[in-house]
Length: 287
Image (cartoon, rainbow, N blue to C red; front, side, top):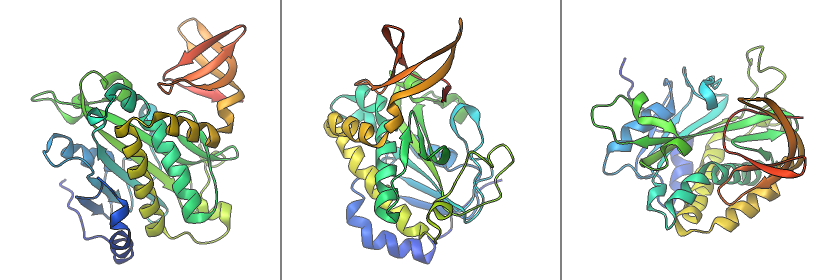
């Protein structure tokens, strides 16, 4: 069934108007949907258009929101912020590195935006989560888009690192749990929300504005090659990036080690015995 956008809700429209100068390259196109399958899927439609950079898709609810590794992102109406933005990191001075650091830059941006909007400073957990203590507050999904004539959206969508040589655009999606919700049983003890942590109401429109302004700022850092600023900010907001015990799977079986930061391409560094290994993707379990 076709899904058509609605006008921005009044509170969002007013907040956007006040903050328009902070959005940089973002926001030339803004679409709002009361309910949609996935903001990332809609944003993909802009990945083959001439005016794609900075397109924003917002939903009040998603019926098929996605997380990493094919997981579902629980997206009930009115309880979260569900947004996707189309970016073109290939235009950066160092496109490969900008693409590799995009998810980390988004984590830095969202952590900073939540702090500015609410006063609470969530931690970043590699590669793409915001957490408060042991519970997940927000997730990020960056999908690289490649131009393949006649291909379906699923065939054009690849994990960012897999798409690096041929990526034409990136859809950066994020979900932030704002209000308490009846989480599915498998999420009940692993998820939290801003209002649950703060004990007060959070203005979703103001939060949305801060996230987009912060992403615009970090996107400019990526395009200009200011990678050290991103990595320094990531380390400052990711205490588990050093000294935490982690476990991951390999073809030879499970491995364990101690985190030692990230490298210049955003890979997680893990000390295993007397050597350091680089983790680029996959499932990492944190102790």
